[in-house]
Image: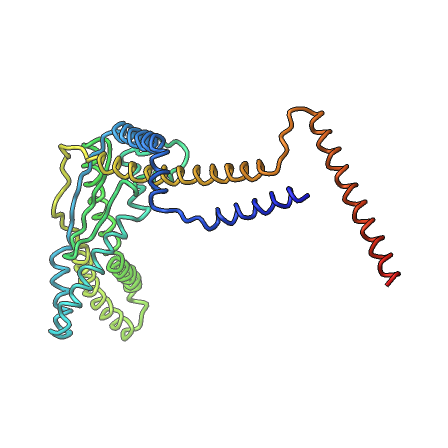
Length: 345
């Protein structure tokens, strides 16, 4: 029993010593050196795999077109901004020119109407090998298209594609669709006014066709109204023609001569750094669990019996049982002596 208690005391001391042990910087280097082959192999595989994947990607070309708002609109807005005070002129001009007009162009270019028109024009369902969902083609087209606005209000449309000719054609197609949608939207209000006046004139003209059945005073009023509406109708047609500004193309897209860089060096370097960090993490994880297993094995080996045969096991158990009986007998005898001594006293 005393041996078992001593072994338990040694185990507790050993555990406490392991907990109080501090890992030095040299221990970290030892772990890295121990797993150096695994770390190098892991990084090499990651770098080579990344390089192979990047180099196997198809060639991609990009074409860029740029547009600006019409000059007459900019002049008109500048006059409005100038009339509100010289101190706020530059700030308001920038807010009107860049934010209002250029951002509106970006919104039109990113609309579903323009996207679907590009898809249909270039049969992108077939090009992108998508036979089921049109939404997937829209997402891929938006991913391959970059639309940006500079501080000067210049809108650039950059399209990426595997075919350089198609890349340039799609960039110019975006410009064409922007022009059409811009005309349709900007002419809507003036067109509505012209249509209203046109219908009103037809109605009055129909009434004046039966002027003999209309009182003279009312007929005179309708004739004056007809002349007034005719003038307004002519002004509405002029306004409709003026309110149809087309975009001004600064640069049309040309067929790119060189493919886009794949970024092989950057991507392989990034893969190397990430794989190195991951390999180091795995190495320390393996070392941690290895030390835990070694500690458990050492602790178990301190008090486990290691007999060579079943007979030895039975003998050790019998010996322990005999020692237990002897200790019990001695305790009983000691208790009887103590009881006898207390009676005599």
